Each structure stands twice: as structure tokens, then as C-alpha cells.
Image (cartoon, rainbow, N blue to C red; front, side):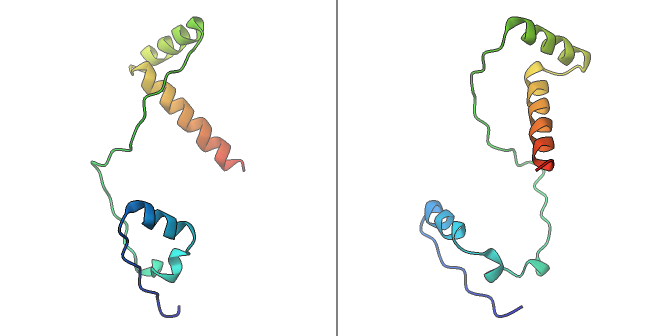
Length: 91
């Protein structure tokens, strides 16, 4: 690997985001020397949304969640995450 470029100093997060959208990080970071970091208490950002469901579907979801002893919103999130992950694997 050639000489690494010096990472610029950024004044804002937006400025940094714009830079990395148009530059290859391998020019600035030797990825062979990186270490895995575990952040066990980091929680992903969430956003509240409204979702209209037919009452019958919501009742069936609540029954399934009850069988698994989990909140129905958590079950919906798990199902959505699994479906999106599966769709991305099939690409």
C-alpha cells in the first residue's frame, strides 16, 4: 500500500459527510491495521412512525407476540428487519 493521505480537519459533520461521499477511505486509512470496537451500550437512533393496519391483522400480530412473550411492536420490528435482511441477501 502506498503512502496514506492525511485526513482533513472538518468544521461540521455535514462537511465531513460530504467529503467521505466523494473520497475512498482506503486512501486515508490502512484497513489492515484496524481493530474491531464493541460498543455494547450504543443504541441505534429510532424514529416514531404511524402505521395503519387492519384491526384483524393487528390482533393476529398481538396473538403471535403473546405466544413469544414479547411486545407486539418488537415483533413487528423483528419481522421487518428479517424481511429487509433477506431481501438484501437475494440481490
